[in-house]
Length: 273
Image 1 (cartoon, rainbow, N blue to C red):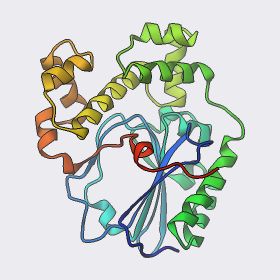
Image 2: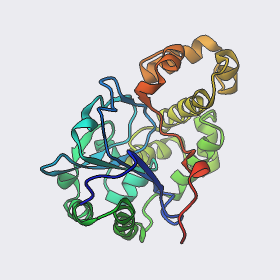
Image 3: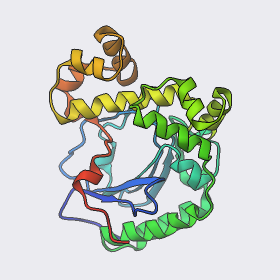
Image 4: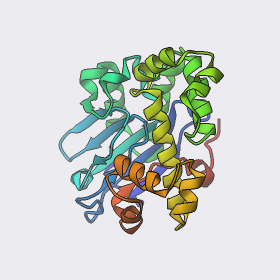
């Protein structure tokens, strides 16, 4: 097992053929209590597979799609090594084939949900000698879950329309572009992502805002307009309702929050096929 690494954070993009379902791998070696008591994961509608070694045992969990902030706090400081496999919003459904409505906003034992996947990932975690070995072995395991496409094409069309509009598209228009009714789409979103289409679009817009705040300080009045809010008051209210803090407080304490942006592919080159 990998017990130490020169770098605390090790990000690996997924293979191009897996990227629809797996965004990246983050392998962390916590040192010097780098995680604060207020460390919080911002909601992003994505699921995660988590494996950690605390010196005695390997803990494997499934984290359902996040709709609300997750206070992780200083928990990671307890681990020798932590691996987070960040999935796309419908990646967890593709991997588990189980209704995501049961998983949303929950941390569950992976062994209880999918014993086969638990054993395979646990073995990979225990046997790998380097971070690259670990990622490559996990990719081979997860690739087998991709051979049969189970995510609805209608859902893929709707999520693409929502992402292209940064969450500003009307639900009725997303349904029209997908060729499905709003009612049918909501059922798909609940089953395959874990939330209804309206909440999904709301989180896409929220993360679009976070992306701009993260890159550089900005004028909230212009950002609220750019993100399609009626006015800045509506922007402030929605931001706080989702994140638990105001935009200004977020700016002051950004180090306490983890924003899961997709800029990894702008900064880390893709792996060879």
